[in-house]
Image (cartoon, rainbow, N blue to C red; front, side, top):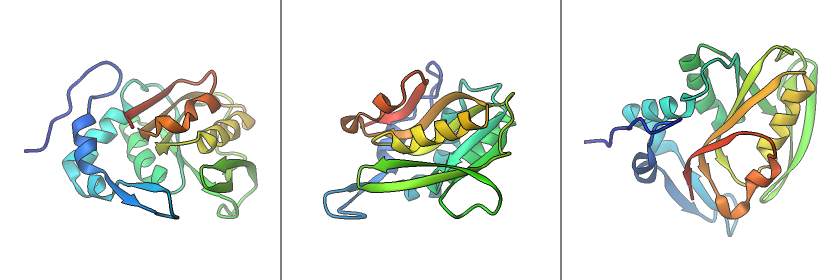
Length: 183
């Protein structure tokens, strides 16, 4: 039987579920990187539902949920539904059709640029940023900056996994950051 989530503080304790449902892929996308594959977690409906509940916990009252391309979309959209909030995709450069704000950042293995539509958020919005992994913090920091450019407030950042050895939280000063599984 699948481990059930328990209600401990803000965010459901799903540690065992995550440990058993996420696999490591060595040397992907390049040598020396250990990729955290969440597809087994996504394929398990009960586990996926538990994770969505845990990600959304404590963020009632947000008006928008920003999901970071690509795996962040998979998590953020159902979190937005759970919170009865809107979903906003934060996309890689050149993928959005309208006028955008852009923010470049460093990854643990390169650089990239994220964009969001200039009208994606209102100044009155409280925005939860959702992604699968917090690594160096660059992606989350760039997304937070995009939210702020629109005048909206960042309510918090929540992720499935946090690669603590990369110290990504250091790039997110002043933000509430929660990870379901620090590794």
